[in-house]
Each structure stands twice: as structure tokens, then as C-alpha cells.
Length: 267
Ligand SMILES: C[S@@+](CC[C@H](N)C(=O)[O-])C[C@H]1O[C@@H](n2cnc3c(N)ncnc32)[C@H](O)[C@@H]1O
Image (cartoon, rainbow, N blue to C red; front, top):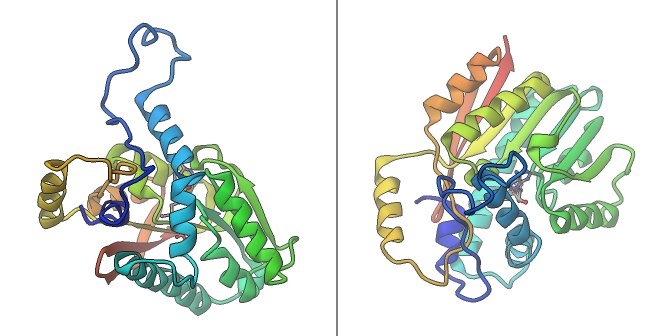
């Protein structure tokens, strides 16, 4: 598994959580009622709980300049910053930032939204499943003196997002989505985007698949949330079905971080 989470797991042993397989059967006795939580719902709840507790603490440190990170976490920080910098460079190249509206879906602590606001973006709606992440993002925005009228934060999952934005961006969130739900999510995010859609995810490669299998042979208390690598062809096909075409892509890497970034535009 190339994913940030798995590799980050190597460093932590306490208070971590496991997530049931997305294909696991629903709890006995409740499977026949339509309101019963599905395996997908249950996995999302686990992700939410994680990013409101130990995950918040861990990722808040990674996405900061804190010295309180280990070598793996420091490398994840470096790799992630490459993704953010690449997005900002592309957006600036396209220009016209003050006239454009943005949706930062799964914004974390605002690693993209804050610099984007500082560059003068007109309107940014940033949201995240985790209230802890959103409130930290909002705190950082206040600390940096960013006008709250131009950058709004909401605690929301991707599935509930509505509205229309010039550009929709979703970075390193699909790590929590298996292939088919990720493709459905690309279609949903595309429906919110008037002109541009940017997504990043851990791409599937045969080597990483082998590493993931090896990792699964050693289950233990250090597991956190499940992490998924995705087939790029499926992500591109989902965007194309939604009326978008691939404009450009980049692969952003550092040891323990491996993320494919793709920009799509409406045809
Ligand atoms: C690895 S962090 C990336 C954060 C941010 N996009 C960035 O690049 O800095 C993943 C984020 O996705 C959020 N997340 C996971 N599943 C989500 C969902 N279904 N809806 C919204 N946010 C989600 C987590 O709470 C976490 O903040």
C-alpha cells in the first residue's frame, strides 16, 4: 500500500482504530431494514471518529511546521506540500482568481484553502467530515487574518455537498474510498463544478498492491483506517462520463507519499 495512512501507521501503536472491510456483511438482525447502517456508512463513521481524535492529532501535526513528527510523517508532509504547491501553481496559471469560486472538498486543516485565499481567490467553500479538522482550519484562517466572507468552513461529508463552483478540488481524500465509490464521488464532484475539477489520490500500481498484501499479513494494533489505492483509468472514465476531459496531471512523491493529481475541464 502506498498510502499515507498505512505508512504512517508504522509509527504509532496506541489508540489506533481498525475499520471493517467495505464488503463486510451488515450487523446481524438489522440487515433487512432500509435504515440499517451499511458497511459504507460504518466505514465513514470510523473515518470521522478517527479524524476527530487520534487522526486529528496526527494529521494536524503533519500539516504544520511542528517539530513533533517522525521521519515518515515529515516525508508525508513534504510530499503533500508538493501536491498543494502544484495545485496552486496550476490555479495561478489559469489566473482570474478573484473572479472564481472554489470548493475545497475534504479540506483538512486548510492546507490548500488558506494559501488559495491568501492568493486572492474570490470565494472558497471548504468542508470536511471532521469537525476537529474544520475548526482547526478555521482557527488558522483567523490567525492569518483571512476575511471570513471569502473563506467559509463547514463540517460536511463529500456526499452532502451541494451548489455550483467554478472549480472543485478534492485532495488526498479518496484514500478512504474503494474504487467504485470513488468513481461515483468523482461524478458527484463533477456535478458541482462549472469549469474545473482537480482530484488527487494514491494510484494503484502492482508493486504497491504487493506491499499492501504483505502489510495485511501482519495485522496488529498499529492499523488505523483502511486505505485504498485507485485505478487511474476508472477515475478518468468517471470524469469523462460527467462531461469533463483530462487537461494535465502530475505525480507528486516523497518517501512514504505517492499521489496522482489530475486536472479536468468541462468539455
Ligand atoms: C489526508 S487528509 C487531506 C486533507 C486535505 N484535503 C489536504 O490535502 O490537506 C484527508 C481528509 O479527508 C477527510 N475525509 C475523509 N472522508 C471524508 C468524507 N467522506 N467527506 C469529507 N471529508 C472526508 C478527513 O476528515 C481528512 O481531513
